[in-house]
Amino acid sequence: MRALRLSPRLVLPACLAGALLWLVAPALSLTPYRPEPTDFEQPLPDVDRVGGPRNAARSSTGGGHRDEGPVRFVSPVIDAPARFDLVGMAGELRPLEYRGRLEGEEWTEWVETANGDPVYFGGADELQVRSRGFRPEGELHYVNVSGSDTFANRVLTTAREAVNSAFLSVASVASAGAGPPQPDMVSRREWGAKDDCRPRTGPAYGEVSAAAVHHTVSANDYGRDEAPGIVLGICRFHRNGNGWNDIGYNFLVDRFGDVYVGRSGGTKKAVVGAHAAGYNAQTTGISSIADHTSAPVSDATENALVDVIAWKLALHGAKATGRTRLVSSGGSSNRFPAGKKVRVKRVFGHRRVSPTQCPGQLNSVLKRIRAAAQERIAEHGGLPPPQPAD
Image (tube, rainbow, N blue to C red; front, side, top):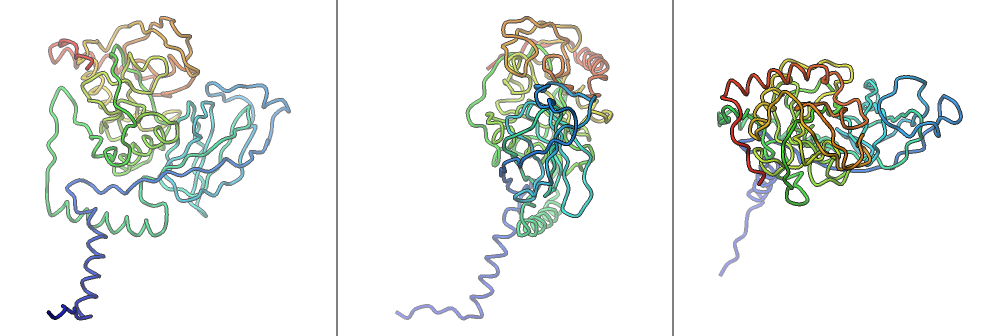
C-alpha cells in the first residue's frame, strides 16, 4: 500500500490553522474570557529607617491606623518578578502602606492596609512598602489576574479578548438573572473561581445573626470589566498567600452595584467565612470593593449593600435593625477574648470587633443601610422561617 504523502502546500496551512485554533479556542465561550491567573512571591528587601526616634521600632506592636508621627521605615523601589495586579505581605496583620507603578510612569497614591489584606493596582511592575513603628519583614505575595504578567501573555490576552468580544456580540446571548428577593449575583464561575480559585476543602456552616461590613482597600477607579479580576485576585491572595480555605468574604459589591458570590458553599446557606476573626460562624461577611479610608460610598454600592443585606438577613430570620449578642471565639486580630459576649448591631462595621479602621467612611452610612434594609424586608412580608444551616 502506498503511504499517504502530504504536500508541503497543505502542511503549512494545516499547522497555521492548528496554531490559530489553539490561540482562540479559550475565547470561544458564551462567558467573558478570563486569563489564567498566576501567583508569585518575592522576599521583601531590607527596609531603611527614614525618620522618627531611634526606639520607634520598639514603641509599637501595630494595631489600627495612626496618623500621628513621621513615617519610620520605607523600602527601596522593588522590581517585581513580573507584572502584577494585586500584592500584599502574606500573614502580616499590622498596618502597611503600598504604592505601585509601571516602570517609567507615575506612582499611585500610598494605600494603607491591615489584617493581611492585599492592595489592588491593576497592572504594575514596581512597588514600594512603608510602615510606622516597626520594620516589616517577610514575603510579598503577588497575583496577576489580567494575563499581563509577561509580554507574550499580554499579546495573547489582547488577541483572545478581541475574539471573545466578537464571539459574544455575534452570539447575542442574554443572561438570565435571578429575581427578588435574592439580588442578581456574579457567580463564582463567572469571576473565575471554578477554574482558578477552588476551595481547599468543603465549606463549614454556622448561623447568620448579623452582617459584618468591610472594604477591600482596593483602588477606587477600576473599570467594571476589571472587577471580576479583582475578586479573583483577592481570592488567590486569601487562599495562596494567607493559606485560607477560600476567599474570606461571603459576598462582595463593586462600585457599579454588582454583587459577587464570595466563599463557596451555597448563597442561601450560613457558610462560615474568614472575614471577622472570632465571629465568622455567627455572621455573614460583605465587602465593598474599594478603599473607603477617604473615599465616599457610591449610591450604586450602597443600594447593592441594602439589597444583599436585606435578602441574606431575612433569609436567616434576622432583622437588619436592632442588636444581637455574639460570642467571641478569640484570635489575635480580635478585640475581645474567647468566651466574651459582645453586643453588636445587626449590621456592623468590621472595626467593631477587630483593631482596624475597616470599613472606613462606609461605617458612617451603615445607619442608613440598616434602615433601608429593614424597610426592604418589611416590603416583602417580614421575616420568613430561618434557613436551615445545612
